[in-house]
Image (cartoon, rainbow, N blue to C red):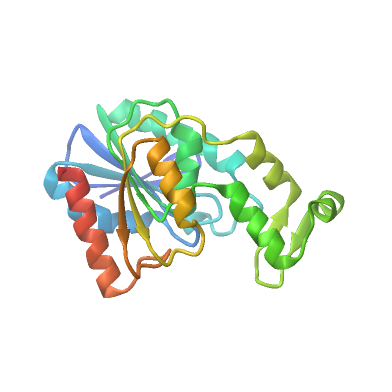
Length: 231
């Protein structure tokens, strides 16, 4: 295991020397150390894992106001550039909002397999759903700029504007998606439309949730990961 920084981004590499790597991108409330679970599966297959802390996460938990796409995307581009310097073959494994960041950051890049778990695929729809849940109109958001909801989320005019200006229009990498049928952040029609549009392999775990955490869900995640890499 090697710990280092890519500019100011804490990073860790798992596994013995190889010319193949998976970049691991955690979701909200995660950290780079989650990459160790992936490493346990892929390092025996000849890969290394490069995992980083996104803004406001892991070693960067003291940061504020940085967990957003206009900060995360340039950082992930730096991470990819570092990976290109060290490895010949680069794949991606990303969770939830980490998958959305990857879609924004790596579109048009030559990549190996991309493994997305519970990906956020339509951020605009998710924000509009939260606004409806909070009873917030677009006019009010435009006037107030930032609104904190009763259910713990913050609505941002700047964030919604960014999302609308940066739609996912291109994605060429061979992509495998694992989705829980009870995912409450990405609906099934959105998932299936994305998978069809970009020719993704889609696996649905019946009864699975957005967060794969029970023993049965984790076993399904383990099997899917190995099958997706070998398939």
